[in-house]
Image 1 (cartoon, rainbow, N blue to C red):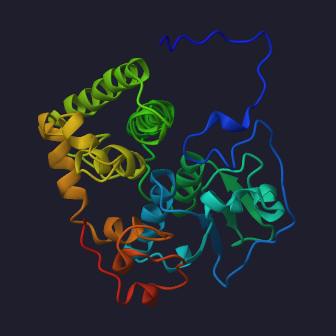
Image 2 (cartoon, one colour):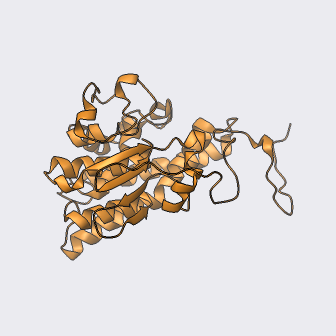
Amino acid sequence: MSTTYEPPKVWEMKKENGGAFASINRPTAGAREEKALPRGEHPFQLYSLATPNGVKVTIMFEELLAAGIKEAEYDAHLIDISKGDQFGSGFVEVNPNSKIPALVDASGDKDIRIFESGAILVHLAEKFNLFLPKEPAARAEVMSWLFWQVGSGPYLGGGFGHFFAYAPEKMEYPIDRFTMETKRQLDVLDKQLANNKYIAGSEYTIADMAIFPWYGALVKGNLYNDSAEFLAVHEYKHLNRWADELIQRKAVLKGRLVNRSFGDEDQQLKERHSDADFDGIDLTYR
């Protein structure tokens, strides 16, 4: 039977489209219910989930705190995207795009909303003068790799990850198409890390924090089921070396578990309001 699809002249949403998250996906934006967001006592209020994009930001916060910056204390509130929490009116006010993570910086006279993980990383790096060099060439390198991740990530997540792990049926063409691109991206990173300790050079920066939750997790076998074997990630030796170094950082181990509501129960920290919340949490990378 042919699987060729003939697009209609005008697309219409069909309930039977299926796939993961089909029950909440709609072609419209905006709030679907009145629902206020919780607020904690710290200067920063993070609304997120421990997906790769969410982990970028929690790693950043934990790294800032590990560096002794007490002003970076934060409350991390769980947004369960499988239940549609991102469509509550309070969340939409912070992020009209209804995607995690979203941040409210309440450290000044006026609350500042920041959405999109890359924007949040830059905001925090500039605010605390850490993990983003000031020297123009070094800064440009970090920003280039940060935006490389922002532009490349959808091919890995929405492309490869969706059709490999979440689509209602396996289809050769899209899996082959996005596997090729994912492996090309892995090769880009592997070649960059062949001559650099970290992504943007000799210093650990927000570029590493942005790239690790996607590509580091991928080569460590923690993304998309059995995709590590399928992608032969062992071939990327320099990328694996870098990933192994990052999981030695306690802030990385902490950050990846904040707002985690899935996986082993001893590695779930659904909400984070102080460092004491990590008591009883197993930080082992697994």
